[in-house]
Length: 342
Image (cartoon, rainbow, N blue to C red; front, side, top):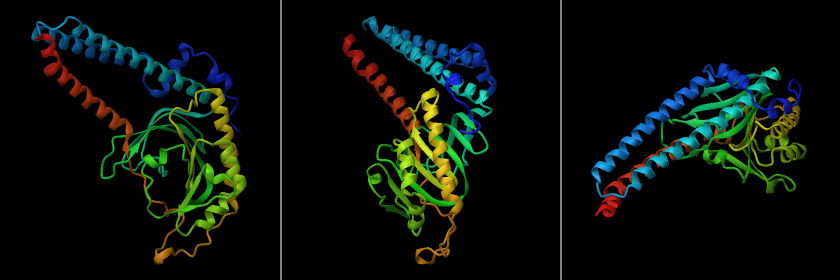
């Protein structure tokens, strides 16, 4: 891809201390500062666990001695897992930062945004994007929708890897839904005004094409068999959305874009899809009279399928975990422990 070199050296090369230091500059927080913060909170948590264990020993004099030890050991295991998770995440973003630096790209370690038009970015949620690589026409990163402001729709939004490509002009809102992926479904892709289209050949086995009512012919004009072949070749497990002048690739959160092999494939996919869609967009024109069914006026830039709301899966899982742990602690303290002691 023009302007982006081979990622092998920058992504697969061993990580050195100066690479972590560079990541700290990108994040505006030194790596040792984050490590210190994690250590302090971990120590405070460990002290709290020791206090709970000591309290159990005092309150439950006849309780087996392994109970406090089990509590402390469980907390220690949680700390170890948390440290490993933090180190792996930092290492992955360090590779991406090094890749961006060596290829003249902008790197942002953490970005909070509400402005992306795609359905994968809930309007009522704060979208935290990590490990962002970008230039003037391309963004690649991982999105974590968090803290929904309203819960009037109960849709769960998972973290996902995405690529945003800027197209030369606005196009109708179109979605290629993949039965192997639930990113857009969980993000709040409702029925609304969408129309389901049948793709030619065997493409319907892999994707379902949706567009706004009145734009069926336009969608089939843009998603021609050669475009669908390109999508199938390079984005078989992804979902694709075209909205306004943006093309989105939605991929699973587990997509390892910090690996050279995966990044090479992704950049190849982006280059091919960008060329295909840019070519189609350059010759496309909206022949609609401006009146939809029922005399409702609309334009390409503003006409979109309904959706774009959701509840963060991370938030729901965290809340569920807290409630579950609280229930287990209460059950152990007031039911199991007295039985063991008496």
